[in-house]
Structures are given as C-alpha cells and as structure tokens.
Length: 113
Image 1 (cartoon, rainbow, N blue to C red):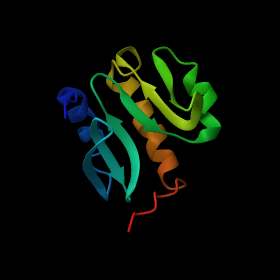
Image 2: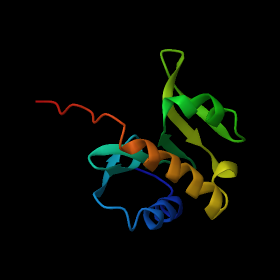
Image 3: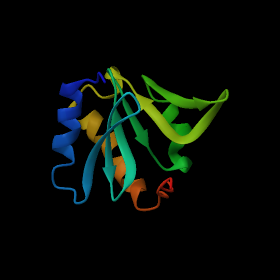
C-alpha cells in the first residue's frame, strides 16, 4: 500500500496532541481515525478530508481541491486536497483543522458483524 510518507508524517505531527488518534491502512493509503471516526487520509500526493458538509461547496472551489465522487455525484463532506493546497504548514493545518472541527459531529461507521 503506497502512500506519501512525508505527507503522512506532516499530518501525524499535526495530530500529535490530539487524543484518541489511531492510524489504519485503508483507502489505498493511511487513514487517521479520531475517536473511532475517519478524519484525514493520506494517499500518494493528496489528503482526503472529512469535513462539515455545509463547508463542502466552498472547500471544493479552492485551488487544487477536488470532490470525492460516488456514482457520478459528489459525496458531500469528503474532499481531496492536492499538493498545491497542502504545500505549506499553514495550508495543511487548515484542512486538518476543518476535519478535526467536524469530527465531533461526524457519525462513526457501523462496524460489520
């Protein structure tokens, strides 16, 4: 499972003081779970962020950001931020903070039996 280890380390450092963080290999990369819920995932050169669906449209308009698509439709609340959108520490921190901000409201995925 290939993912950008440098980018993952940057995210890891930003989540260092956050309680209940767990790393799981999924989504063809590494996902940072907070309180048992998907928060940020790192792939090849972009991060997938779970954000407030109310912020989705505005976030999707940003430079080097794309929507997650399912069956030809945007999946509200999930975006991919590419290299230009995560270039600086401040840029990446913005996406991580948006994801953390929504985490307390996000619903956990039901565990399969």
